[in-house]
Structures are given as structure tokens and as C-alpha cells.
Image (cartoon, rainbow, N blue to C red; front, side):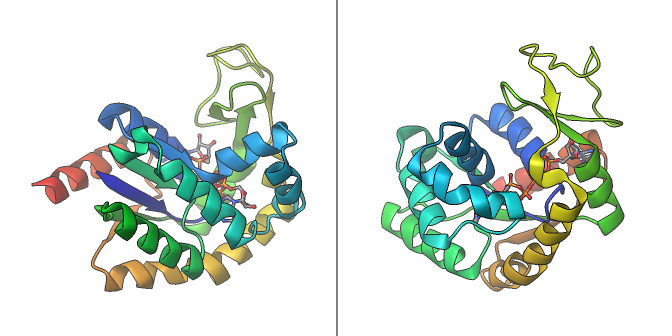
Length: 217
Ligand code: AP5
């Protein structure tokens, strides 16, 4: 299975990619996570990406495409993957098509998480992440057992810098302009499956599993 999860910031792509990748033993390829790791490590890529990410803008296509191309060539991804947060521009989508053609691994399905603006805003402003292991929480939906600390590693929970209100606005504008056209792109390729992104996690997971079974049979 080779999946793409597409949708606005806060739609739940990362949350559901984590669950599905575990259940289906697929590599979880999140460009946001990879870029945040590069930033933490202050690598050359991280230093280049920093200013864009802080403003809620997209990191230039050539950097992200090279990152994903390398990641998809690794053995675990050759067995199947979930792309979370990539592609995000028409040029990224075209580069992905070309790479997958080269590797002989066409996409199975693109899930579009159709999510309303109030839901997205609530999810983003309430999201907290572990500063140590990156696990996701929410101030209302997914509270940790001990307030302010990660259940898994005990790390301190923080707000992602780009989850502040002024940056969220930029991210949503960038999504509308750069990423929304991909819905049409994948519709034309008959790969797009629309998912009701406003659903709560358990319900949404059931929808995803049902759709996967359908496209597998
Ligand atoms: P990235 O990390 O990819 O951010 P994003 O796409 O904006 O997505 P988010 O992580 O904000 O949302 P999500 O859909 O994963 O939601 P989540 O599951 O966390 O990218 C960050 C930055 O990196 C970009 O702005 C850009 O600068 C750069 N970048 C990344 N990829 C790039 C690319 N391809 N090209 C160029 N630049 C790139 O859920 C959000 C919250 O809601 C959580 O608290 C969660 O617990 C809760 N929640 C989730 N699902 C549900 C549900 N069903 N019900 C209730 N609560 C839910």
C-alpha cells in the first residue's frame, strides 16, 4: 500500500498516519517531522528551512523533494508507505509521480481529509506536542495522564511555534493557494478518496479502514 494523506493543517494527517502505519506496517513519511528533526539538529537543511517554517510558509520544493526522494528509496518504504504532508504543491506532486514511476511503485490511494475551518482552528490552537519524543496531545481531546508531561517519555509538552494564531493564518492561506489544487490533480488521476475530516479519531479511523478494505479488494 502506498498512501498520501492530503488536507489542511490540523486535519489529523499526522494522528491518523501514526495509527495506520502501525496497524499496516507501513513507513510513516512526514515531511513536517523530518524538517523539525533537521531544525532540532541544526543541520544545513534545518538551518535553510527554519525561516520558512517559523512564518508558516512552505520550504522550497527542491529541498523537500530531495528529502522525500531519499526517504522513499530506503528498504522500509519500498514495502509500502504513508506520505503525510507531502506533496504540497503541483511541482512536488509531479516530482513524486516521476520518482514513483522510476521506482515502479505507483500510488494506491490519496485520502483527502475534508475538514471545516472551525474544527481545524480548534485542533491547531489546542495541540500540544512532547518536546522530547514529538508525541501529539490536545488540551481538550487528548489530555496526557499528568498535566503538561508526555505519557510515553515524560518529556515536557509544548506548543508548536507555528501553532500560534498569527502563523496558523499564514499556513491556511498557503494551503488554499498551493496545496488545494492537488485535490483536482489526484481526482483526474482517479486516486482521490474524500474523508470526512471533522469526525472524531475513532470514527475517522473506522472510515479509513473501511475505504482501505474497499480499495484493496
Ligand atoms: P506539517 O508538520 O506537515 O504541518 P501541517 O501540514 O500544517 O499539518 P499539521 O501537523 O499541523 O496537522 P495534521 O493534519 O498532521 O494534524 P494532527 O494529526 O497533528 O508541516 C509544518 C511545516 O513544515 C509547514 O508549515 C512547512 O513550513 C514545512 N513543510 C512540511 N512539509 C512540507 C512540504 N511538503 N513542502 C514544503 N514545506 C513543508 O492533529 C492536530 C491536532 O488535532 C492534534 O492535537 C490531534 O491530537 C488533534 N486531532 C487530530 N485528529 C483528530 C480527530 N479526528 N478528532 C479530534 N482531534 C483530532
